Image (tube, rainbow, N blue to C red; front, top):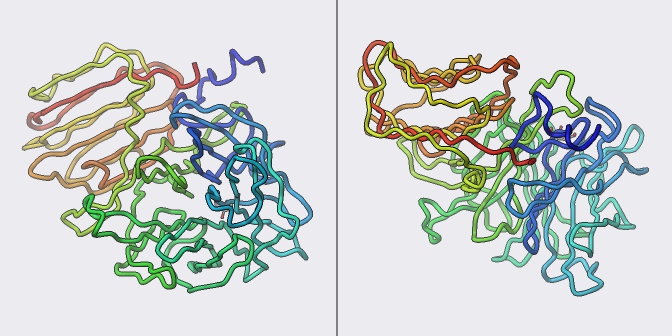
Length: 443
Ligand code: FRU
């Protein structure tokens, strides 16, 4: 397909990453080094459905505009290349560094086929991720059980060692440690009821206070435990909490070494439908993570990264006005791409909502609903704060500054529909409404 048509197709996301062609699922190997964010992704190089798992690769300087690079890791005799992570080996712990450039090291699951079991392997790059060599002594962790997989590695500075979170089986996860990234010792196991696959483990300040932190052990469906980790044992201090309330957010992972102390995450928007498209599946828009005290206790909050502003185009703005039943508010736009920010006091309104490409996003009875998903969201001091990212085939909803996040795939009719804001019963009070049309990230 000629390049001028590629990325302009009817259902092609315009500010969410998709590979040029074929199937993708989990984001892998997220790492920042020397001005570049790397995004590797599970990819089937030869098919539009899942299979032949290979690591595709894309690079961005701003997390918004991506350039797809050569595939990084291809299947070998140990198996196909399942999910994993990446680090910068700042101190050359593994001894792979050859020149001035720090080595990037990736950790992945070698998904063996019977009789070859699932094991964990590593590969390294001495040219900023442009070419990759697999370690000659792979695997670095032998088979433990079942389809153990998805290693996520980070540097734990208080104990001067590398830590790996790893999925075992069922709802079971484990933690390993290493000094050289090649030999690994198992530290402790844990369970995240209701969650499996794709672990992540990270520390965050609570309410921005660097002296008061908690650790998050995260599983693929957005279920997570809050607790403490001392380099030996993860001690959970909560039940399983949920950070992803949409039907399509899965396998999220955070970037290693993101600048400015930010903790940034991207996920696979699992389950979207893309009829007659050359690609299948999309990534979420990246979010920034924080821990905040909410009415329910300390919670992980997810908010879209501020870089969405790079795509802002025309803006329609309303302040201090009433959304009156029967009098819809409809900006004069034909765009399909929006960043919408709404602060609203529902007051006595029975419901309010937004029609998005003809589909109703509705708030009623303390719940926000879109298609088959309905989630509770209470106003804070009478007020709801909503941010919506709308792409051609996805909607991300962020409520009360990221306390609620929902990733949703949808398939609109190709026809154009106006964007309409409405209230029912009684007026709702719009404190502020900004409708930012977005430019495509691909043009
Ligand atoms: C999650 C997952 C991972 C695995 C990968 C295979 O979506 O099942 O556990 O490594 O996808 O593509």
